[in-house]
Length: 285
Image (cartoon, rainbow, N blue to C red):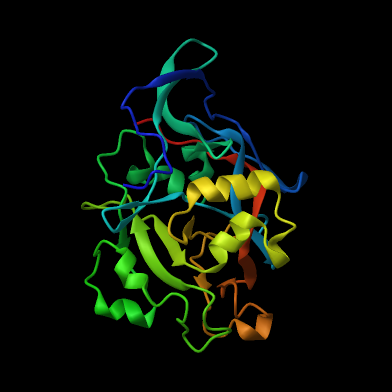
């Protein structure tokens, strides 16, 4: 097991929370509000949420995509789900959520409550799911893997040299994957996981990464393992599924970035930022 995380005790913590009916939906980067839409959807656990995500650098997307903390379990790659907690609403009723302190920040299931992911069964704290990342990808190298095969560290052994003919080789080896998405009639939660030699440089603030904030670098140190980093692969514009080093991305200056071909939004996986948005309500289980 990775030693970067405190053991999950199975205990449920009790904290104050909020339900999600009539919540104002907003997204912000660097403190500036970029969207303000009211939703009448009912549910639980919505509202303003700080998260660490890969920065949106071009296109109409309002904000970055959230990181998913990584741990390695006997050579297998997992996306860590937060600890289950019990929250209390203003009227005294309770519901289950998931959050924990990680790398100096509150890591919460609310990070992923947008673009319909909030309705995915696997995102619920009560879901009977493991956290392993399973292959579900479009990168040619993933053709060597079985569908839904659990990703292993050894699959990324050539990460310091890997390239696909797009952009600069050696920045990292990505995989498309699914997280907490096993079972029949279960909505897939898409993820990109990448092993990159740039990850330890970001944590250390070396060279071009000197401008990364201490809080982000501290979180990265806790949320990455063996050079692996991952993010929820849902464009924050219209919820498409972007790609790192995508074909055709060079014409938009995104050959070494994450590119959404639907409306040309671009994200930089080597520029994690502390961001804010309004999480959508989760349906009550």
